Image 1: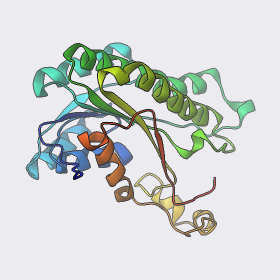
Image 2 (image 1 turned 180 degrees about the vertical axis):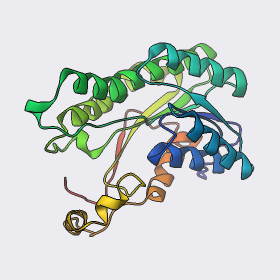
Image 3 (image 1 turned 30 degrees about the vertical axis):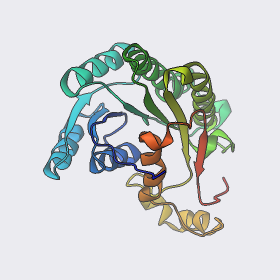
Image 4 (image 1 turned 45 degrees about the vertical axis):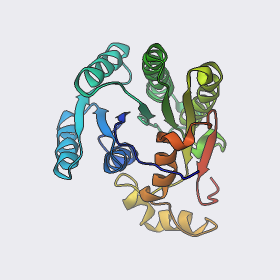
Length: 252
């Protein structure tokens, strides 16, 4: 049996596509043939990414969406399916963190992190999953968590809890939806260099952190491409409820 990660004919919705992982995931999926609904809160960034993807021969649609607002989530799914067709692939990527010691975390901090990183992805997967079930054609959902789901990090308690919850969410959804040929898996990246963290990791303090890693190197966004495309493709049709760690052996 040959393995193909060609995504021609598939429609993918990516959250948090205005920067970092989400932006990269949208580009990667589009380059492999998927039509991509790119979502986030910054419309100007979405317009730029849509123009970039279309300039390279792909097809994309920017949709302003706030994962903290259930009405905004449902509206975005409606727009995506009306304009692009049925969603076959969901990449639940949007996330935030607030670095504070537990005694300093406010209720607003806690709600913002958990609502963005866990409640919003749950409602979005629920909405997309319900439609996949009604169509009877299956689909793929990829939840982007973090190695902090397993390894506590000082000052990021709410973030780690939200990502651990996403791993559990994946397993629960996989259990209920396997009969409908909906595959749900979690991708847990370690430290990967992005525009947001590059300055820190090239500072004296950041370089000490990198040098503590077994391979003495950060991951690159491209290191995530193979697993992302596998999980989005039909080649992973017997894979669900799994958590894949991509961290180069980095300790936290």
